Length: 110
Image (cartoon, rainbow, N blue to C red; front, side):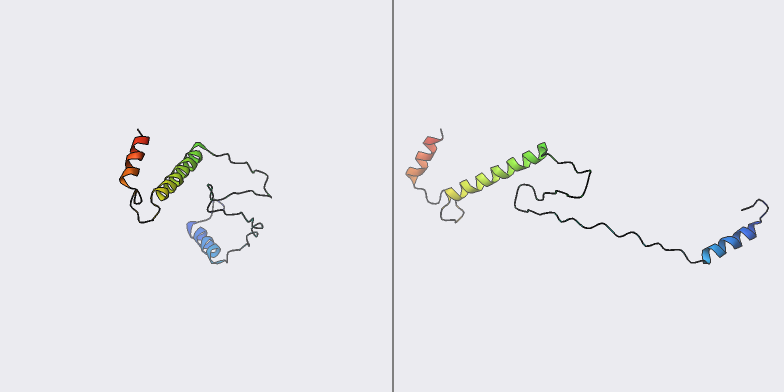
């Protein structure tokens, strides 16, 4: 662009530029995909162990992860205890207990 071009000349050059087709460059293909093992029923839902990266850093469990594992362990223990107290599976706490069993249980927890 020179200083002595007029507005109309600049506008015409701009319009010509807009009418030209745009050059298209194909993007490079993505690298080969890595497959990670998903373990949905473990404490952590997935484990990632990349094999072809140089910036991989092992992730140590955080305090939040440990709290979550503890919460799940406590919930599993509570479910086991509820099932132990309800052998018939009818959803009533102490369904198979007699009055003597209730008295013994209350005496043992004092």
